[in-house]
Every structure is written in structure tokens, then in C-alpha cells.
Image (cartoon, rainbow, N blue to C red; front, top):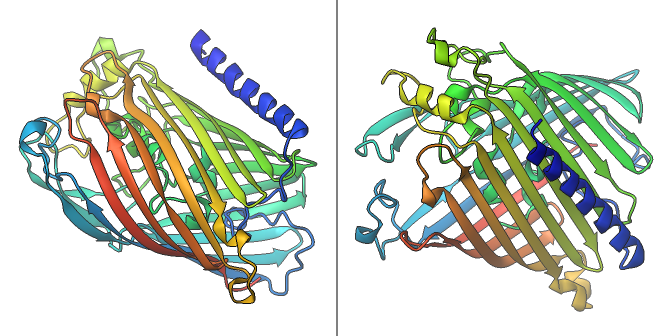
Length: 450
């Protein structure tokens, strides 16, 4: 691993230690869990609250989102290459970003099953898109995993709280959003934009996971197939490499992922996660040219995230940094692929970055009224910075990097349902038009059996 990656990892560890020390000397939170008791841990085959006695072996639940956005900027495919001619435009959109149903079953003797099917954007298996910078052609795109995707299907054997083995189709626990992606676990109407741009989200792969909870620590290590470098692109970095346009997932190269969570401070979770794996050999297309002979396309990702819930506040943050070796040669190879290839045929960066921070305060905590008991109203703000072309050895696409600020409200009439509203603006470099938006949404996350 390169020196700068070691320095970056050390920085993450230092941040975690400093935050933990600050917590010991300052405000102590109320709980090791989020303020909302419906969270992603159950979807991952966990029930961290041992006091919760199950009344049924069957678990059924899920989550869903319905949203509307009015975007005060152009959606024309030339809005970045010819920005001056696409000012002062707007468009509106309705969407069902995610509707998910989860079914789990406890067979007994430590054996459990989990399955999750996801409907993205209310569709079936394909979508028509206007391709940017390709003469605005209409193309029918095969989306990642299809618009209806089996996001989880696993069998788990639990030997103890500290040792569990899971085999099947599993959520990859890299980054904040992949591990905590239910709509009650972030304030925005949509998932945090930075991670949702440069990383697969929700990232799910078929593999093997070993995880456990030891005191105030939770660990997870996962073996999974590598990413497919044919699918990388400039706007989303390596995101598309987790999917497959074929009826199978290529597994010429294997990869590893890990996550480490600490709950030592009441109300605070500190997390480190990462991924490493080769990608260039994990494709169907192969080149016999000598200059591609030793190309590996090693993807390395490091991530730090935290979540604090206490004193009527919820505060969350994340930093993700990724590196792709041989990016220039991979870009050259992808740009030279045939026109009928499912590859985006675009350049990809050597480095990508995403960072975000959000904080919300429950205004209902200041109202003493029986009618509002159990309700919550969070006023929140969020900041993101991300760049899918953070470092390149070829062309620099300046519009791929931006700051984004957002503010809004989350109203919980009951803990399983949230109504969201936010104003956001994507702040781009001066040669482009900024991208303000107003969004409204309603979402639920719940389990109907225990």
C-alpha cells in the first residue's frame, strides 16, 4: 500500500481516538443506538438488544420512500459542456427511490435466514436515459442489478454474540450509508449525496461474512468478488463496478472488506471501514496488448463515520477516500471498447473523495403536551463535499466535484414514519451553474413481526 494511504488510515484512527477522548471529558449521550429504534441492524441479521424477546420466528418488515423534487437548474445533457446557454431553467420529478421488503426466519439452534427484495424507482428492469456528451442519444440502460433487485439473501450460523458466520448475498459494510441506509437513519429526502455518488449504494454482493459483538466493539470481515473495471466512469467512480449486465457476477478476482464499530461512549458510535480488491482482471473483456499485461486496477477504500444521539440532538458524519491503481490505462482501455459494449466507455479517476456532516435538533423536546408525546420534529442542516474525479492522470472534469449544503425538517408522527422537507444547493465551480432544489418526501421503516 502506498505511503499516502497509510497516512490517511492513520488520520482516521487518530480522529476516532480524539473523538472518544472528547466524549469522555464532555457530554455523554443517552443511548448506543440511534434516537429512532427502527434501524438497519435487524436487516443485517442482528438484534443488539438482548432484552428484546422474540415472540415469533418469522420477521417481516421493510422500508420505503416517496419523494417529489423541484430542481431549479437544467436537466439537459449539455448543461455542463455548454453551461452558459442553460441558465434559469427548472424541472420537477416524482420518484420512489427505494421500496424494500424484508423477510427473516429463525430456524433455531443458531441458524437464521434473511432476504430482502428492493424496488428502485418503481420500475422493473430497465430505464431509458439521455447520455451526456454522447450527442444526447436515447439509450436503454440495464441498471445495476436491475430495477428489481434481490438485495439480501443469506443463511447465518450464530455460535455466540461474538461469532457469527453469514453466507449468501450480503450488504457490504463500507461507509456510513451502506451500513445505515434506512430513511430513518439520515435527515435528507435522498440518501447522502457524496457516498451515494462515488460508492455502490446500497452495496450488496454474494460472499462470506464473519462478524460479532465483543463488549463495546463490533467487528465484521467479508470476502466478496472484486469490482468490474469495465463499468467504472467519471461521474460515479467505481460505483457501477459492483453491478453486472450479465446473468451472473464475474468472480475472477476476489476482494476483502471490513468494518469496526466502537460503542464505548454512551450515545456515540465510531466506525472505521475499508475495502481492497483488484478490478481489471474481473471483466469479460480481455486485451492481449502487452501494455495491459500487468494492469491490476486495485481499488482501495478507507472510510470513517460516526453517529451521536443524545440531549435531543442527532449528529452524524462521514469521510470516504478511494484510490484506483492503473487508472490511466484502465481509462484508455474503457474508452477504446466497442460501441455495443455495456461499458460506459469513460475515463475514471485514480482518486475519489466524499465527506459529509449533518446535525439535527428535536424541537418537540421543548413542548410538554400529551398530544405530542412520542412525536419528533428535527430541524437539520447538512454539508457535503465530493469529487468523483478528485485526482486524474488524464482529462479533468471539474463539474464532478462540488460542495452541497442543505437544510430542512424531519417530522416523526410515530417512530416508524417520517415526513421530510429540505432545500439544498449544489455549489459548482464558477464556469458551471449551481444546482438548487426543493424536495419533499414521506418514508417508513418498520418491522411488523418480532
